[in-house]
Length: 231
Image (cartoon, rainbow, N blue to C red; front, side, top):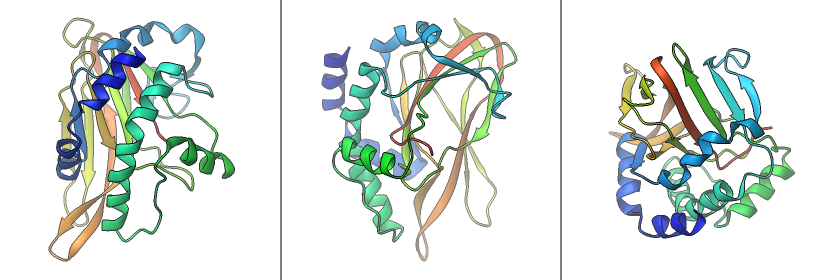
């Protein structure tokens, strides 16, 4: 799986990905998680949290512990260098002095020194009538502006409904909804919370949240992979 991901990441069109992120706040990566379908069967070894208890909706969240399982840790490390370059260009556009280091391990060390040690990466398992409410996870001093989400179940076969939804709120404008057309094994890079948008007076910040609509039938399993930990 790790070698497959290394080859897949090497062939990604990073210029096109950055253009998508700048235009929409997300970039689709078709089939990136196809080798990882077995992750959906590993929930028995993870800490289970009710989304209702966490005030995030209805369904189950399966938290990964520290350290992340090697396949996911490897994927995160492979994606990070190119994403750090994009994140630094975003900060430059917004006039933010903070710069992300070139290596993921250095960034993780910064987080842990600031007491950010709680893993946010997790599996979501939603059954009939379950949903994930609109939210963002951007707590802490060291927050990475991009995260990866993925779908491990097959729409129309394993479940119906359960669309991945994003909303973008711009100043003095109505919120803009977006639905990401994910298939089994697809991933997407999305804005964690804020991104720069070019206006008539230069760049300004827009705020993004994401959700999963109500599952109408079956069971939907998805993955969220963060590049930062929470306090």
